[in-house]
Image (cartoon, rainbow, N blue to C red; front, side, top):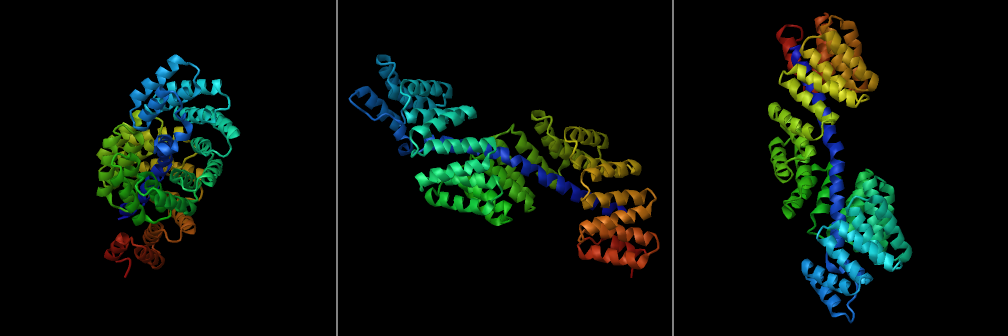
Length: 477
């Protein structure tokens, strides 16, 4: 009877622990999408990069290389531009063009070398600085990318591409307000550039400005309706705004357009999990991990979904695989400890919670969950001490007071237990489990009238088990 109340309370704590984990993990995933934006800008329709290519002149080989580049025949284009450079090693435009071929082929080091040589030969060659900045960005060399893009802007302030690169760099650096300003400038110069709306919307998402982000994604999709990236990102905005069915629609469209977009599958899984659609969530995580089988973020998220579906052993396996990749992830240690608790593997659970607390000493979650284990093992003094520590770290958490109150009652101190339940209800006046536990405590202390009122309130808040027990025992009418 009392144990049921505790179990349900503990499940509420599990939900709080689990729901926070994927939110924190989501943002690094978006960094991968940003990289896709940079690639799309340089490698999209040829009209977007042709200003950075040398125009064909009298040199037939250079013209031939340009035609091959446009046709997507990159290896043959490479041969043509290299032939020009064998005859004239200081041909800046041939160097720039060959650098773009290397970029298309993913050979970023060689791309940077050619762009650097072109810029050194012609210090006014803004296209070479622009392209060098993008290549540095793709290599993760953010300071160099920013420096080259700024130099390109100084040479040609009305050219939009280096502003876009600077915006992407600021996104990677977490300077989201500055990123928005850069994309503003891109869109002033080209109001129909869909990818810049998507990138600015992403920055606005990171700032928590979901409504204006939605407007940017709407504009991006009006200009480029078959691009899955703004659909994915708009799905995230809708999710954050609580518009979950619309988020599912966008994310389903995103994965239909690009079945290989693992991030969209993962986000679809997250929304389905929050909606309580555990099987749909697990299916989406399976598709995500089929694409990226060793991604620790996705493994941890599927572990959460498995745990919510009651499949704790499978959840432990996913958490363990995630920790093999990232052994110092406190949130995964905490969630694995929760799953181990549900399996009755208390010693292992305590080890995980201790490790998590060591990594994140100011996080109350591992201490709350340690307390829950000690209630399972009926070590109430240790449970109370764990909840005391959790409340030192977060004195406004109703569930900690509720659980400490339960431990105090079981330890034979109903007066202090009642104080804890009162405090829990002062923080959360609709907290069903605190009403329930206070009601049980009062009934057991002989204060049946007030106790039954609390149990009836708990039942109105959809927890009725202990009211039925009290009625069956003759405590309540």
